[in-house]
Image 1 (cartoon, rainbow, N blue to C red):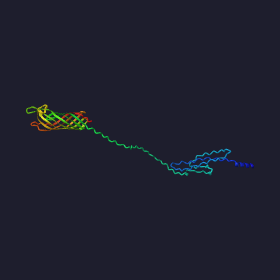
Image 2 (cartoon, helix red, strand yellow):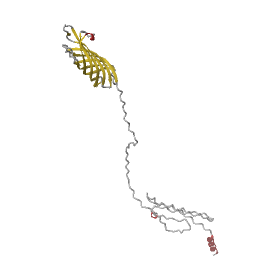
Image 3 (cartoon, rainbow, N blue to C red):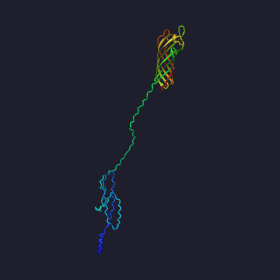
Image 4 (cartoon, rainbow, N blue to C red):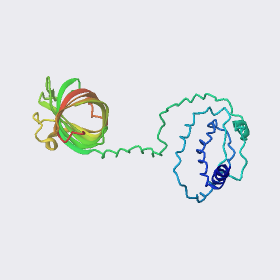
Length: 313
């Protein structure tokens, strides 16, 4: 009896080894919120209690291995064990579901189609329009010319040859302003006889202002109109060769000459040209003494050789 009493006292007052602390529970993993869902903030976990000093243990007690927490489905409730000694330990698990958190219902996902259109845009920078270049006016063409003329014309119902000179200015591309002098060198056919059958000759000379205008120009060819307006004189002389007009004139007249013509010029070089001319010589004169009567008007044709500067390019 005394032995039993002693054993009971020994067991009653013997130091008792504390029970091993339970393994920490796995953290509760909440399901990932859907995009666009508002999630309420969760309460911070309670701080772990500070370790209590343990009494000296006479013997080391092997702790049982903590059970490995199994992966739990986020949708299933998870048991949360309290490690605080002040809290009551309940055998019923606490269910934590996603419904306990205030969330908004997620909107169904919508599919958006974005079409990117690339357009070639024009430059919006202002470009000043270029001003039309004004071509400088060509310099006014001014040149001069001079040459000799040869004409064949009817004089008093006979063919005669006239020689002369002319010259002037070329103004621009069209105009010609000059002067000319023509003299009857020979009258072909039978000579004029006086009452004593002495041979006589007819002399004539005139000159005036020439005005010309070019109508057509094709390269080196020109076709134009020309007019001479002047005055002169004519007489009958015994000088058949017409070497001295004043000393042997038997009868003479004054005359006014109007001579329109058409002329074609061919520029051979820049400084020489040939001209072919045809027209009519109109003469207004005073009266001859009877029985002398000579008609000084008539048509003519001839050619000219001119020297000057004819390059207009």
